[in-house]
Length: 276
Image (cartoon, rainbow, N blue to C red):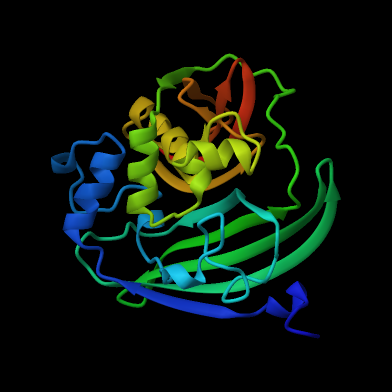
């Protein structure tokens, strides 16, 4: 296979170490409107997305602000990148201030045809370790779509939740979350680019930020729960600054369904397993 064939990237690996610096933990907390003094010794769920980051120099960034494809991730020239979803298993909490390591591998690359044209799906495996003990196992789904108007209108009505929170995000919060996660994608902080180049009516809320808000809303409603696994996916983008709502319902013992909705229709969905 040629290096220009995305399938040739399957099996590529990347390793990144991080000290889980308490100062950066504080910045992440502030970006999420969380009291830094309440974080404690364990890194809160899903905050690992603000750590273990391999940055790139400006010369290796594309027009969209993302690193140019063809390094660890396969090439997908002239396509728009989206974080589509993922699955995580939580074995041990990451410890603040203790060095850790992320070991990543390209698990699958698949081309599909969707409503908006050709789509390249990339599945990346991430394993997070401290002291050689596996703390989190993750599969992350990334999709690259051909430039086309994004699907903005939902078709699934949001169910009635057992708990819910209304979330209002402005451009400052989106910028700060981009900053602490070192996410250069301009759709999250550059309104003219988001509107004129990628076709969104406003700034786009980060997929990881939505997953974080859904999960922590569950934990605020069920403070004694220990989350074991989470599977989540994006249905359509959430556009700021219009408020959206996160909520959920308990299913059978130890399972919960979570979602985020805007204008009454689903935008993100998740399934969570937990111990009481």
